[in-house]
Length: 294
Image 1 (cartoon, rainbow, N blue to C red):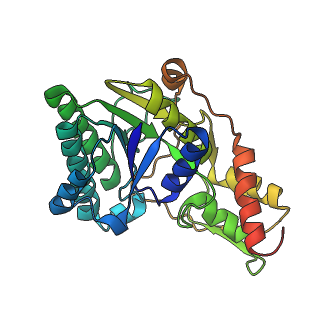
Image 2 (tube, helix red, strand yellow; image 1 turned 90 degrees about the vertical axis):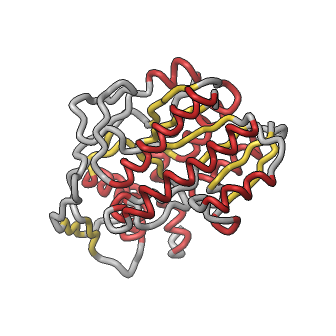
């Protein structure tokens, strides 16, 4: 199998490449990242045609930081949409299959846990850009018979994630010996966290098991508040620091999300293997080594 991974040198991309190389030597990986060209540019999309014989594309590359999407709305809405269009055009003309990632589809849902059939309530520019991409994927499947699998991960975390995401942001503060206070904007929001290696195992199962068009929610199936994450990271790190919550609520904040992963378990034969505590331990150890404490 020959696959193209966009965003292959990003957080999830690096983990996925390592996972696939260890898991299946029969998979040939073609890399695409920002250094290879901006996929949101139509001319760059034409550069994809240089690749021959691609069986499947995993489209990881996108602008994906929700707070930033309010200030760089065009980059998110137009950029994410156009890059997905270019990928789908390649798939259409080269009989390739697509795995597309989408998130923040449900807003403050009335249903917990959230299944794939729950009403869609996108409430930020990033979520809107992914919804538009989903609609484009469905159109290309129905009109041009492009096989597309849509994965809706809730919150992926792991070693190597940018420090403006919550868990590395907290782990850095808690393990950094020069910091005595742990600062957060809001301690209340709850999220469903899945360790990146478990997400990679799902992507692998999707690569080898699935055809046609379908949508799967992806998470662990349990949520934790920011305050609970701080408590757990502090316990793992053996640190006790003062917590300063600034009571700054993000625009259109989502209070709680829990993924219903029954469908992924049933159809793809997948389930998470890494507990939240185990995943946090990996990140804490990473930062402790960085600060010379491990």
